[in-house]
Length: 184
Length: 247
Image (cartoon, each protein chain N blue to C red):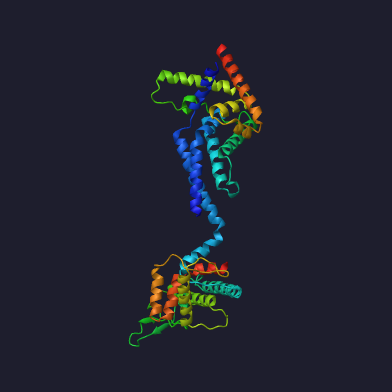
């Protein structure tokens, strides 16, 4: 009976893992801009989900996806807090990973097309990193990871109406940022 | 412009983790998670381990222990510990084996068995209670072990008797003990339940084809009750018996 329960939890975890791994990694990567740190945050977030699923008190997590995003967001906040506390000398050198190393592009794509995709991505990522935290979160969660406004509202602890306003403002800010970049 | 902007945003969807990371992390989390769970469970359920082990080794034997028996068993446990300590402390640890005289003190009595050949010595060890003869020229230390083993078996038998008898003053014959054990086995076979009666119940478990148990039953059928009890004690393990008593 115990084995059956464990097996059920394992299957449940694998299902959530498979459907969310890319989204969580993308969220972490766009926030910390380091492949290794993003991988670390992602694996820690899923480990916490596993522990929560196995913990009797928390075994009834209503929304596992929301739980994952909350944990990831907290881990990202911890990451910035830890890095802020370090002096400049002791800070580890941030791994400069070119985007192409974390981008999966079809093999059929020609080299010139790939170069174009890379440069476009670099441009958007750059623009995104210049937005404030709320706008970044909105763009990543709403447009890239396709969370609903209600899910984002839960995650960011803001009313749903505010989230809709934020979506509009974030898009405007990004458009502005990209235009400014183009003018240069 | 809106469409163009969204296309630009959507291009970031191509950011994906390595497939190696995806698979490796999942496996690591699940495997290490399961291992940790198993470890924690074994630590949490540690008090149950000895009970489970006993359930396996006792096979069909059903023994229920009431309050009075618990007091009795505690006494038996203390006695067993004291006996073991005293026996071990009598080992010739401090002897100088290079010194023949010292060595000679702990060797068994030398008995001349043939006057015509006085050089030939036979070592005879006589256990006062069991009259067990030890083979010729057996080394003294192994003889001590044999004696210890014999005495331990006696203690085991006494403890088993204490578990079985309801009245501490009751004198049990080998046949009575054997009958009780066999009756318990039969009863367990019939009930075949996992109910717990009293503080502890050793019950029917999966070891139906235990050869040692089958051997013991053969001895019982042959009315060799002492042999049967010894065989049953083989099925039991003294350490596990101690585990029960220590709980």
